Every structure is written in C-alpha cells, then in structure tokens.
Amino acid sequence: MLLRDCLNELRVNLLHDRSDRIDGSADDTLWSDDTLIRYIDEAQRKLAREAFVIRDGSTPAVTQVTLVAGQAQYQLHEAVLAVISARYDTDTPDLVRVGHWFVGGFRMPDPNVFDINQVYTLTPGRPVAYSTDTEVVNDDYDSAGVPTLRVFPTPTANEAGKIIYLRVIRKPIERLSAKMLKVSPEVGEDYHFEMLDWAAYLALRIQDQDAGNRAAAADFEARFNALLKRAQRTAMRKLFAPSGWGFGQAGFTWAR
Image (cartoon, rainbow, N blue to C red):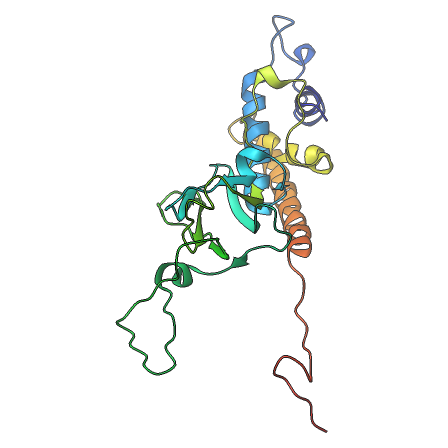
C-alpha cells in the first residue's frame, strides 16, 4: 500500500473521520493529514523497533562499512538496531562474531606461563572477527544508543578502503511525511493494514466523545499488541535455528 492508501484507510474505515459527519465546512475533519501521517509513521517505527520486521542486506548506507587503517571501531547508521552478520569484502564466509571481552581484552594464551596481568594483542591486519556491543548507553526507553561495529584485529593500510558487508535489523530510514504520499511504508505490505491499529489508537486515546472512544482506543491497542507478538515469533523463527547435538564427532563420543 502507498502512504496515501494507508492514510485513507485510517481516516475513513478505522476512524470514520469524514467531512459529511461534522457540522460546518465540507472540509472539516477531526484530524489533519499531517497528524495522521505522524501516527502512521510512529506505528511502523514501533513495529520495526519491537518486532524486527525490517531486515536489510542491500542498502549501502546501513549495510556497508569502509575500513580505515588503524581504526577498529565504526559507528553504524542510526537506523540500525542490530547486526545479523558481517562479511569481509570479497570473502564468502562471514566474519566470526565475538563479544566485547574478546575484542577489548583478548589475551593470547602462553603454553608455559599464564599471567592475567599481561595483555597481548594480535598483530594488526585483515579482520577475522567482529563485535557489535553498544558502547554508549543512555536512559531513554527502548534505546541504548546506536550499535558500533568493532573489528579484530585492527585494519592496516593494506585493508584501508575494503568493505565490511552487513546484514542488519533496522528501523525505517526516513520519517513519513505528507510529501511521501506516493511512497510505500518500509515495513512489509503484509503488515500495512494491521499497523494502522496503532495509528488509530494514538488518534483516539485523547478524543473523548462522551467516553465512547476510550473503548475503541483500547481495542485498537490490543489488536496491535497481538500483531507485535505474532511478528516477533515470525522474526525469531527466521533469525534463529535450533542447535543440534552430534555424537562421535567434534570431541563427543558415544559408548554403548
């Protein structure tokens, strides 16, 4: 659906906000286009933020990181919520994903002496691993700063200009506005009708027509929350695969 279709569905079929229902000018409506578009924008951002429905591996602005000699840490695009995988330039396999401890405090084991106070680092060069632990934490709800990508070891001049290709979960890149009526929201079309329930909730939550809208607002809110749960289950099913046990291999043996 285009944004103009979403706007019409919200105004006419969900909110019943038509000029022929209001006394006065034929142009009178309860909500302006700008207000309803803002509510639709918030609906798709909430859906993307909480149900991970936008996965992207092709938009250069959010999926490509250019390496710089001597630089291990890179700020990602503000729309990025999480990194699914990272791949070095022309390689086929993905880089190994590691935690903050590995990147920030890796200690090369010594076969003879182990001194926890002595920290070793690998020689700078071609990245073999990455971490996306967020380095900046704030107190905003549902926001812990934009993820940062850290590569290990640190690139040298030989790796400068090479690309790390990412697959990410992200929010919409652009805010919806009245100038984008012929543009489709970034969340998948399968979610367009149902995400309008949240926009309808935002519109009705403060509209008290003899208290009649309170029940309608609560119903729209409940329907959208049900959508979030279904979308979250779908995202988890696509993103994660169950682990299996193997016997008689990789260090495991099976004896009768």
